[in-house]
Amino acid sequence: MGWELYDALIDGIPEGIAVKDFCKGVSWSYVEAECGLGIAKTVQDGARAQLYTGNYLNLDLKSLAALAKSWRFSEASLGVAAMNAWYTQPDKLAALGADVDGGESYAGRNQNPFDSMEERYAGKKIAVIGHFPGMATMDRVGHLTVLERNCRNDNDVPDSACEYILPDQDFVFLTGTTLTNKTMPRLLELSRSACTVVAGPSSLPAWPVVEAGADIVAGSVVTDAQAAKYAVRGGSKQQWRAGIKKFVWEPVRG
Picture 1 (cartoon, rainbow, N blue to C red):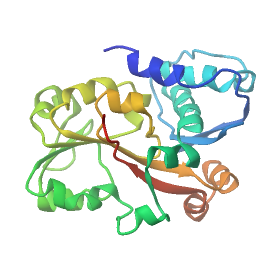
Picture 2: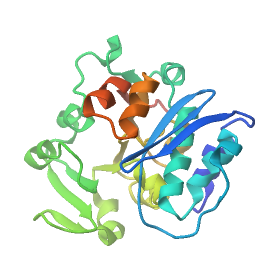
Picture 3: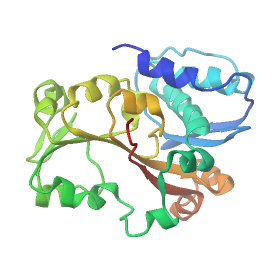
Picture 4: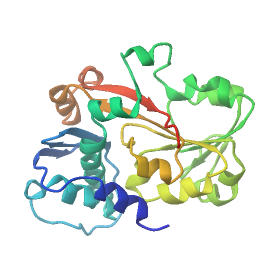
């Protein structure tokens, strides 16, 4: 374990791709590069010190993506958005065979990946890292445990319980923001015996994430850059919905 996942994701980005624009918003961040626009959830807190104190526009995309290793989580959020600017593009999703909202292969899927997997996890032990929207179905049909820093429901346990609970689960759902806060490598390692789903707009449809232990990646791809940028900068939910589409990628391992 260590930085292997991060280094593999960074190494997969070519050098010299110019960064055109960026925004660290209150809820979301984006990075616009020559190859496209990437988004990530803005995670607050972490260390006070930054890895880079200059103008981010002076960095190429690979160097900006390397800031995903920052312990200042708002800076790391920008690094993950930079990774998404490379990995989460419509042409790359098509090459992977991912199901994208609005396409023929997406027909019949619920946009919420949790609900669309109901038949698979019914009656099973399910762990979720943090409170996801749409967990009511899991709670209704399965045996749900939620790992949460601030427990507020009866099926919540402290996130430090991951070492004890995750190895015994059938399904584990975690957000892409676990890449930002550096918990993803260990959570995936603990969940090796489960079907593991990495979900949310920060999620990366990239083989290093699969090799680290993810079985399914469910995220968001930007399809209207202007609408997505306006939404990140404080726009409406309508602009957000107009700017992105959801995807589900269940890779076939060789």
